[in-house]
Image 1 (cartoon, rainbow, N blue to C red):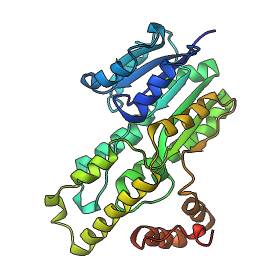
Image 2 (image 1 turned 45 degrees about the vertical axis):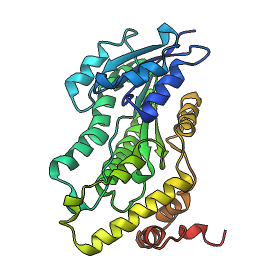
Image 3 (image 1 turned 180 degrees about the vertical axis):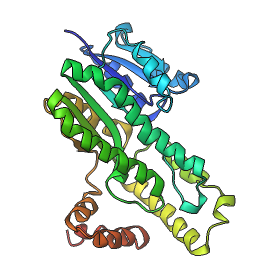
Image 4 (image 1 turned 90 degrees about the horizontal axis):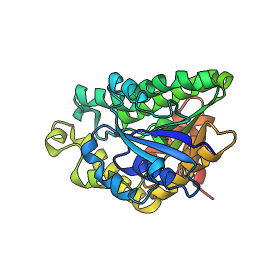
Length: 296
């Protein structure tokens, strides 16, 4: 049986690394995985994880999703001259009061999360259209569906990814190319380390008004509680990716957790948006449950 060719971005750690290992280690050897990363000096952990894999199921390539020439050059390195499943996983986060973020930092978030995703899909899409076959899976976030305090820029980038994929999916129905968004909640990767190390730094926070600093401190406490209670292990997230890959007719959206669904539904049911804003404020800053959870 011919292997399905998979290309995954952002494989130096976390979900990308885990998915590359899982597919390359498939007991039936159904996949040929091209695991890509911007910096090949970070490949050692991935190599250690796949050391026992079959030689024909795995290869590491250098690819920077923010460099269009790097993305285009990667196409020529695919030995099978096709990609059946494209997984756009590369992404970066940004948290803190808006006043703390330099312009270039905010621009980088969009360069990776949005334009990196767009340029990667743009490069591999013509082949899928020509073959009238293909699947695109994008690592998204609950933060791409609803606003989260002190994640303004990150959410903006993920909102844009959601709009891009939803719009493109409509057209791609004609070409039998499927797009799926994996809506992740908190994941036990290196996020908590960033929280503990303080992001942004104390010097940046000193330039923010005292009320905002107080709210941000409350938000960090809220994050720590949420991570303790509902953060998922990478393996749980990978199961959702595999569900999308194995589906005969993949859905547009897959949710890795139902924890935030009450707030998501509240946002969709209230056209003005006001109820969601009040509910999220209460949820984060008053230690209250999402409105639809009350009384359950």
